Figure 1 (cartoon, helix red, strand yellow):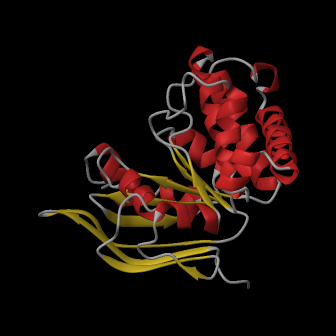
Figure 2 (spheres, one colour; figure 1 turned 180 degrees about the vertical axis):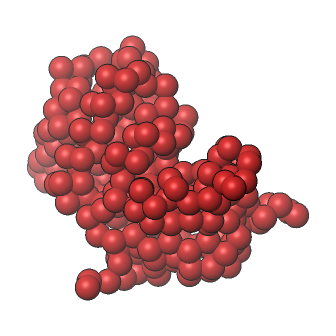
Figure 3 (cartoon, rainbow, N blue to C red; figure 1 turned 180 degrees about the horizontal axis):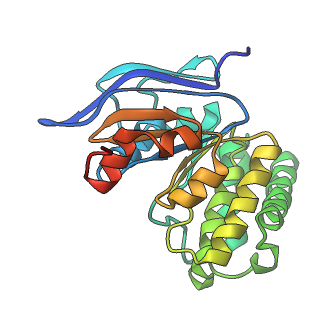
Length: 256
């Protein structure tokens, strides 16, 4: 078996006296959709913030694609191949959809300050390639016809798709999505599921936080459950949804 794409062990994160994450361990294999669920306040977004460099863990091991990323800065995490979206949409609202994706693409550009100022031939070629790739990604997520629309004028569902396109522009190996279906209706959620399956089929591993448990059970290969910053269950969806600890965490009653 090939080595896992992502492996964390013993991850701890404290905020003063609050233990937000306690001895969390996950192993994500290449090519899978791995889900992360749990009640509000379970530590899911905190873990995402640790994995993407926004928070520095206090202890633990974090290896991604064979590279040690423990306490790595966000730009190092992105360059290593991890991209993310956020629970609350964070677009450049007064820029067009195309411009938003182009911003994400600049994480993989090479032109420096001098090239940008002098507008050398290589810089112009790179800018043209950035724009072309942004157009392709907007088509890929299904909003190509909205490329010239200002982001704030897009529907909520299209803004979510735009965030995914911008994340894909960084050429990730692992795409981490924080509640991408939040606020979507049934049709939008079904379309999102198809998009995520397409992304995985095209070779990108997905780590997914989502409160829509039905979506997660029908989409993920494996799921981990957090409660109060600790992992209480992990496995294939059928096993996880019948785990007594998971039932108790969600319902607040003993499975017995």
